Image (cartoon, rainbow, N blue to C red; front, side, top):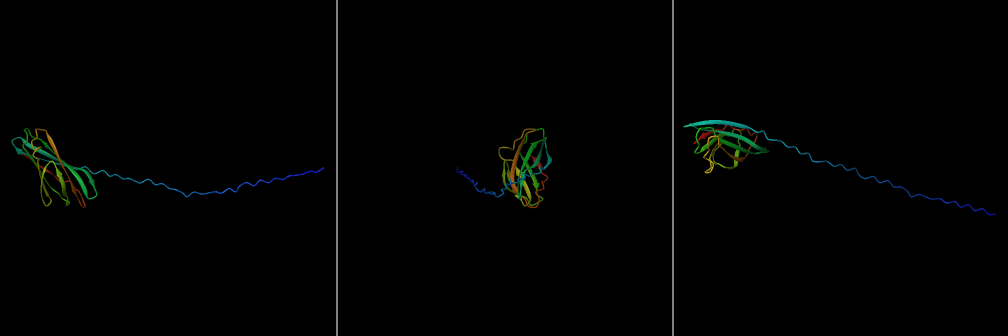
Length: 149
């Protein structure tokens, strides 16, 4: 009798481990700084029941620039025929562009008179003018004075 023995050897394939590079995803950090809203109001009475108040508000601020709005309100008993708001900037601010008023400046002194279409204000009525400007070192809100016409 012949006995045949067959031996079979199976070789498994070599396993290769691949290491992927570490990936780190960083989301950008966004920091939003809300401007400090500053309001200053001064009322001037011009006689005959005419008076107005002006409120200066910093609407937005960014490095070296800002936007401000000034609301003029008739605080008197009769309609206004016009108004003027005046202030002096304390920190070297300048106005680049103004809307809804007529601008006159002399150094740090600012004077804004009504536009042709927003000078008449009924008692308790109001209008707003605004502007963009620049600042350096500080943007302190000025004290404003309103004169009723």
